[in-house]
Image (cartoon, rainbow, N blue to C red; front, side):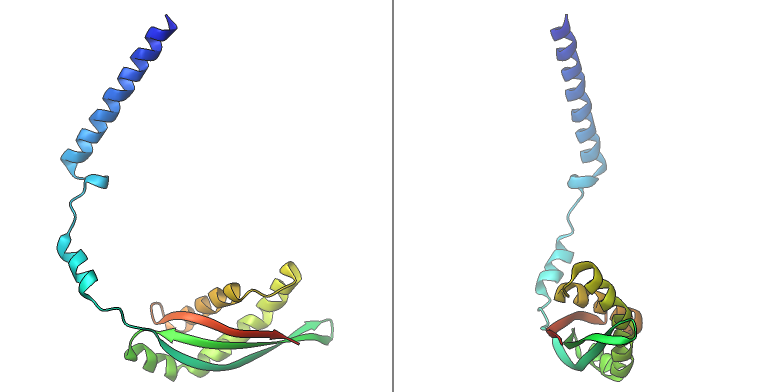
Length: 152
């Protein structure tokens, strides 16, 4: 009696899944959607443009505890952009970017040090990319690379 119910349930499940797949094929949705070969060919035809590096002055951030400086963090940064028009835009707003990074990291670094006891270049790079995107606009900065990081 129980085996009959299991076999019937299995057969119903197979019929439902087969019907679902048939409808998806007929409507051309999901994995059965038509592939636009011209768009893929255009993506492959575009040559990969190497990113342009823009050096930034070292960022010197003091870390306070109470009224005294307990550490000074020196961060060497370079910005990467794709295309000369983006390079011109970033070069024009470089002082604003540097100021934005200093303002944000002044509050961000003590929180990271208090939680993790150590700075991570990936976390700083991601944070600075967010700040750069706010200041410069989306899709202008390709990447923010933390070249060096020293705690004194």
